[in-house]
Amino acid sequence: MTIHWNKVTWYSKAIALVLFVALPFFGFWLGVQYGAIWQMSTTSTGTAVPALSIAPTGATGLIPYYTDPAEWQTDANNTKGGFSIAYPIDFPTQDNFMGTQSTDWRLNANGVAGVKYFTLTVPRAFEPQTNFVDATLTVGASANATAVAQCMTPDPSGLPHTASTSTATIDGIPFTIFHATGVGAGNYYDTTSYRTVHNGKCYAIEYTVHSAQIMNYPASYGLMPFNTTTVDALMTNIVETFKFL
Image 1 (cartoon, rainbow, N blue to C red):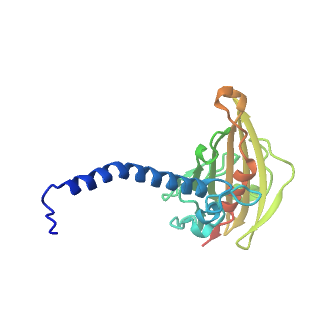
Image 2: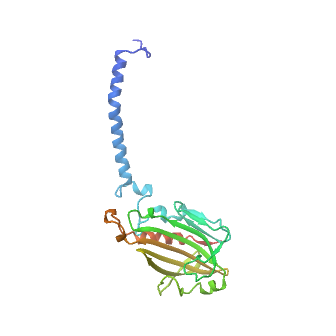
């Protein structure tokens, strides 16, 4: 039998009818299967989650990307600052390439000028549906004699600070760690300041975690307290990538 492909016949009509009826059902079946696979890969109990590197790991609750600085962006373009620092690429940053001086190069600078070389912001979306507002990390330095003299002592003015300090070694350089807290209009500010004197300058690597009182929001928002362990672990991981050039 010779088949004429350009001629409408009873069997071509039958095939077209079968395809017309069967294809929607086949497409629906594929969609269901794909949805099941996607759900398995994104659920917290699915075996595919670790492979996608989206599941929180360890006591910190951070996803693997935020614990692996090798995957981050490195800021080493600010040669005037004499340092490099790495950070997750999804956080906005600012560099002070001009080296403009100001008195906010570190917390409680007591009116002494310095340079805030680098600023990083962790947005509210990092801890969604919580009272987390944002977190800011800065790197500043000053060669002013007063700044250097006061670098390693608790600040006499400004936000309250804890009497105790601790130490840390970052890339072989010892730092003293200071803590300060502040409140205002239902907002909380917790600052951790890493300081050291290097090449005649006082360097301060500081991060401030800003949160709001949950009672300020309507109960219908359903906000939960943010995970302080997760945020502190992230900020500490960023600080520990600091290196002098």
